[in-house]
Amino acid sequence: MNKRLDRSKLKIGVYHLQPYARTEAHIKDLAACGIDFVICLNDDRAALDLFEKYGVGAIVSGIVPGWWGGDGDNAGKFAETHPLEKYVAAAEKFVDHPAIWGIDCGDEPSALDFPHYGKVMDLVERKFENQFAYLNLYPNYASVAQNNAIQTVNQLGTTTYAEHIAEYCKNVPVDYICYDFYLYSINVTKAYENLRVVADACLKTGRDMWIVLQVNSSREEEWISEDGLRFQAYTAMAFGAQNITWACYTAGWWHNQVLDKNGEKTEQYEKLKKVNAEIKTISEEYMKFRRVSSHFVGFAGTKWLEAVEQEPIDALSTGVFQNVRAEGGEPIVVGQMVSRTGDGRYALMICAADDPYEKAPKTYRILLEADRTVKAIGGSGEIGIETLADGTKAVTVRSNAGVLLIAE
Image (cartoon, rainbow, N blue to C red; front, side):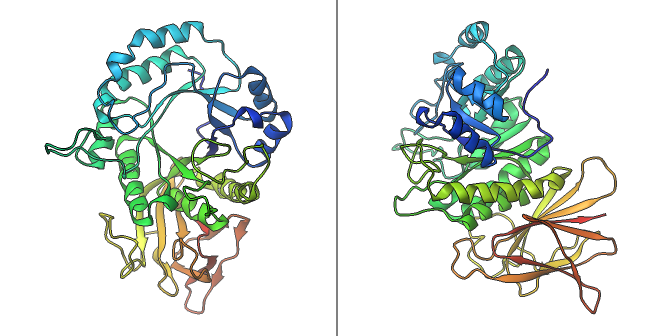
């Protein structure tokens, strides 16, 4: 089928573009911010015409019946309230538009509803010829099922998050896993564990990993910084993320969106625009590779892995890249990658993860050994690689930056 989302490119999306931000000037600014698509747009044909003009796609809500897991009190009721006939009827009356890339099928369902979601997603993929079926999952801080007398509701519908993801993979026949995680409202260590579980499930089942991150704030007095955006994006990329969505561009939930309630740009606009441009610069080469593993290098003795079921290492050796580490032992998250075409090239996607809360950001060098020619790409383009007296290669980075190392 001809699906409009180009999966060969890393795409960047946002949640919510409210009616007060749908003028031509607003949508032109949206595209200039590096946004490729919007989730939760309704079937607004005037806005969709402008989306088409500026090359932006929409994952449209309201075309098919909506569903949200919420606090879990409706878990297991999806099939009863949303029979397949409703989706068939929706498809029959659907009027296509070139800017509609996807059909929003719901958000954060319980595992109890995955069997029916499998049928729904399959039907939507077949009935909507040009669109893919979109579904977003809970993060690992959603409540799990407990075998006790006092719990009346749970969100995940399983006893562990890993089981939740496994049940999704078993029941829902789509080639991606998308989930949201709002790191600066939760914590770093749970974010790492969530990345690990989902990325490894994607690797095992041959799926792409999509992630929803935060550009807004759960606390009114807090504004996510440029480096906060970088840290979220580059750690996700070190685990192989191929699609990044930011929440929220306009009012949706919480505070300090990219645009305010009057549709005016806040300080988040320029931050997001800059970081999106960096991501896309790196992604031109990054998307030519696929993740095979991720590693926490230099994390021993830190607090960042308290909830992570993976041991840190002092240095990473892959056979092509040797003794990869930060010069001063700073924590770095490293994704090991291989060429998608099998042309013999290898890569490492690295996030300088020493200072996620910006207590003392600094510049330092990442060291490695390699017999091959190595190229380094950062957010501004190619980075020079220094060769030290003993033959060690060195790449200078700053806290929270991302760098892609390619062995030719």
